[in-house]
Image (cartoon, rainbow, N blue to C red; front, top):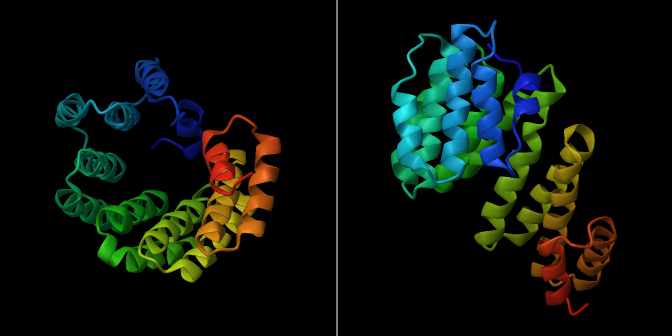
Length: 236
């Protein structure tokens, strides 16, 4: 099974085309086991999906045949992501549900949390329940890379609550995402967690607080489009 570190070194979600090239090359490296090659091919399909090459991604997944829980879970996850990203979230739910079941039975915590996080996106009516299940698993996780899921989980639930008009609850989730980003996350996650907190503060009418954070973020990344847009909204 591939490690998180191996995949992190190959992935750049801001550059899916470059990620696809690196993943393809890694799959062809001598010494790559058949299981690892199959896992890498699922990630090639994911990179294709991020480029909206949904048909190609689906055909690649059709060709992946390796009977192991990690590969099965990843194939199910990527089939679900293709459906969700192509505008069919309801059809994606059974795939994410099955991925959750397979990963849970095999003790694959990282992939199980991934499946629950996708269920929260594809099944928004039950987003809080799926998110809480995933967060409960993180309490028992041993490695910090798995615990990093807390950033995305709190952030996604925050946006769900924000867009539903539950602004105080949303701010709580964004604050929790920011705390998790400080403890376990990347520099990008810390930046975007602060931005989301400031955006929610603007929705709450706490404009001075929002402006202070956005100005601090602009010093760090003066060309960031989201920060510049918020500064414009705040009249800065």
